[in-house]
Image (cartoon, rainbow, N blue to C red; front, side, top):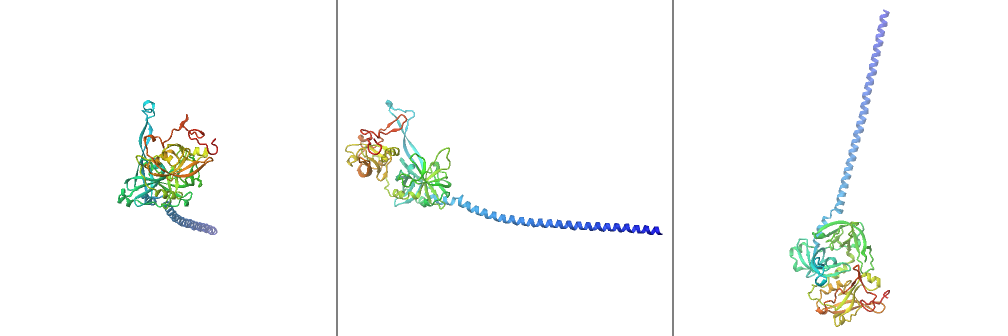
Length: 462
């Protein structure tokens, strides 16, 4: 009995142990489940919160990006898309086509009969651009560069509607490289008049370096095209040795230039440089052309030449005449090099005066230097001949001259009545016979006191 009781106790104790293990195991399992659920729930809630936060951040970023895109779009419209400016300005820009005759060497007949030089003449076509700046009762007036129309026998102006009209040079200033071209209003049909506009002139003094600009012109003669860039520099000038320097406002011959990286190519000359208001702030004129140079173009600052343009606009429009008047002189160019070397005025030196001719009658003597013809600056003998080609015999022309007075030169103004161009005066007003050295350079006999130029006045002339 005792043994049975002990065995029963033993079984009960074992069962209790198993039950306790089961309870403990169950508790552990339950605890583990709860713990896993808690930790998993925490991670899930953190992940959920993180996802919400990330979504919110992304949403805010998208909103910011949207604002930035909008800002960029707005900024892009102002700085990259210039279509509105171009659309408004294009009707005031024209293309200019010129035809001139130049003398060239005949390759097959280098020397003519008896070994004489045999030149050949050929017609040359050029292209450029212009800006419509005004009109009067009978003419539409267009600004361009002097080098665009220099030496042109005929001119044609093309408008934005693809029509074209003949034009004439109304006036020019070669030193400032400016010209005004006139088209008769009678030659322009009403539809073209409705299509074109007069350009709005801005203030180039207000330009800032880094400001965006637009250039419009007849690049390469292919028709109007557009380039954009910035103002790279202000107050530049082309020096006498063709280098670029800082603008000297005290110089009478220097032109204030705006430097830009907007592409300016042949044919763009005379076209417009516009600010972001569509106003003309410059007249495109030149570029530095070199394999080592990129993006350096120049435009004449408009605010510095408005007075000159207005003066040219008010000049009398003239045609070249077949039998122009003459001065009765033989001349020679006094260029900037000679002017600086000998301290003499730049212009055209009178080497000989025909007795009884126009200049002689006006009291002009040899050694006088002509600096202006009818108010226009004269710097070369070719310019003087070109000026004369617009004036008939018998017309009065005012000349500004520098007369040697024993110590230097004094300026005088004389009126000359142009003479007839007779056979015996064929060589007058011509290039003169200048001596060339072995290198083909002009040799000026400035120090000869008995012949040739005979210049003996001024410092360093002896």
